[in-house]
Length: 43
Image 1 (cartoon, rainbow, N blue to C red):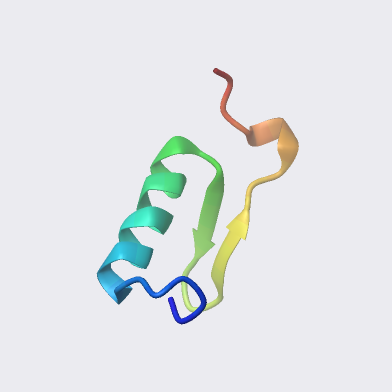
Image 2: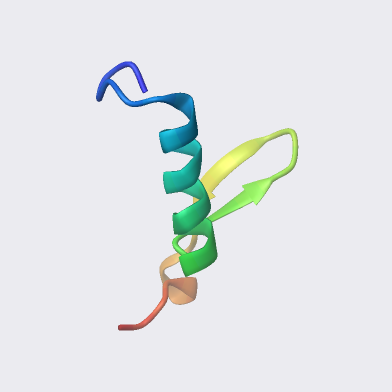
């Protein structure tokens, strides 16, 4: 947020979008991580 000057809500929306698309996954109380390449969405 600090680096790009975006609001917290904007950053959360971006991560949520990436999660819905399958690019990242979230582990509760741990963080959000990039999904393994075999799990990446296809175009």
